Amino acid sequence: MRSARTSTTASDGDLTGRARILQAAVNRFAVDGTAAPLRAIASDAGVSAGLILHHFGSREGLREACDELVLTQMRESKTSVVARPSGGAALLVQLAQVEGYAALVGYVLRCLQEGGPRLRTLVDHMVEDAVAYLHEGEAAGTVSRSRFPQARARFMVEQALGALLLQLPAQQDRLDLQELPRWLRDYSERIVGPALELYTEPLFTDSSLLDAYLSTTTTAAPTDHERASTP
Image (tube, rainbow, N blue to C red):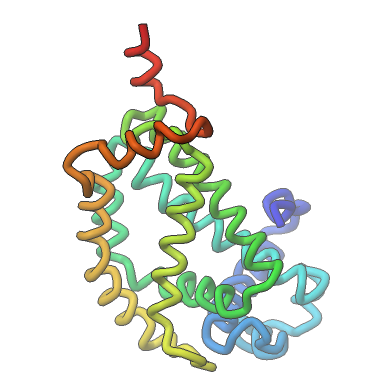
């Protein structure tokens, strides 16, 4: 999947056409599901179906490129908030423009509905990206270090995706991209405050539960603070 980042160089016109196809594909897959026909995507993008095959080789190639586009946009938005000292300003900008993420969220919902090996690969890449931007946040002093960096990242990704999937009406065959931005605005207004509170102010008032768990396991690496305090 990651090979999409190192695609061969093309002319400005080709890049413009490729980008237009990708955006049309993400939108169409979000609306109609991942089985949406290529001819519908071509019509949305104002190109021929043959041009899709020219750029991406196959439906599978187009899906891989869509996955990569979504991963890139998610990684950039998360990094700007989590791994930068000015993350609060970036968060406010993103919240003000949250409707603009509707197609991306719709595409992820469709991937969750589809399931299978492709979803597992997509989630693995989300976790990989989360490990990276959380590590950047640790280096920048905006994120606490973890005893379980890989597991923490996976927990956060799976928790977010599971909560998102629960919002989708059961067996919905078609998403309305006109309605999805409003839904996304309502959803973000419900969850952002509690999520930030949970991540910023510990839920438990002391560490007794964590201490009890750590006393029974040897799998957790000590944090830098614990290393520094060890005689």
